[in-house]
Image (cartoon, rainbow, N blue to C red; front, side, top):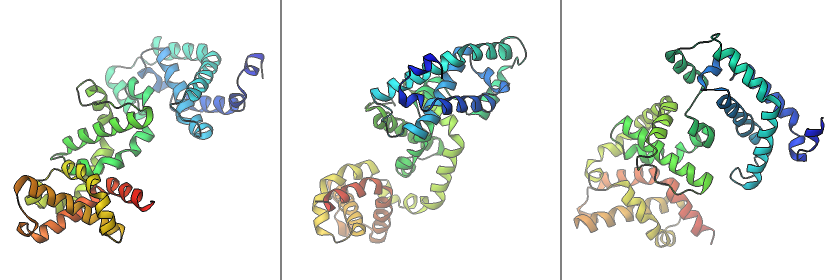
Length: 304
């Protein structure tokens, strides 16, 4: 270990071997010679590979106990980034120049696009700010709700990715941002392109497994948007918790209460005027759709 390395924080010095090993492995695989010319210049290449080594590998292997939005992690990230840039920066710059600027791999735009698809290359904004693994996991929180709010696969993809991006920014950085104002359209479109196959599969699975009952419930679907039901859940949760004896009953009765309140408030239709079996099917399905909203309410009162 040289003098410069001895000055690094102990927590980083302990992981230098792994940092170097991962860096070398990535150069042979994700950043192999035929894959690096998708980057505009050597600095962009260096930025991407150091980010990948630190945020997508080392963090999950050894530092996941540290909040990745904290100043502590930001400081450690900069230390490791500076170490990698100092150790490999000149080598990577020459590597890029040799492979991409001297005509050895003079790729035209169509080949670049293919390489982007093959290597998972994404917009620099996304690459620097979004952990794609964590982003993908958030699809589960909104996929069913967005399915029933959408009329086409394209609308579903847009709504799910938009909602997921807002959730991701909020949970990761505490940013309460409306990304549907047009400023983030390019980012949303890039994310849709990146996850297009997976989004298509999610939509088809939902259509196959859950779409029929609710889509056929035209009487209620025409009259009750899901967001109106969701907005009423908290209002009736306390009352329904003490009137029911199990979570399953609570889930159904809470949803039923919200549905029947909307039907009366907006259409002056009492429960005895509603199509009984259709109401049962609709409430059952919606209670499943909104379970990720209902379960925390039940748990809250159940712990008291």
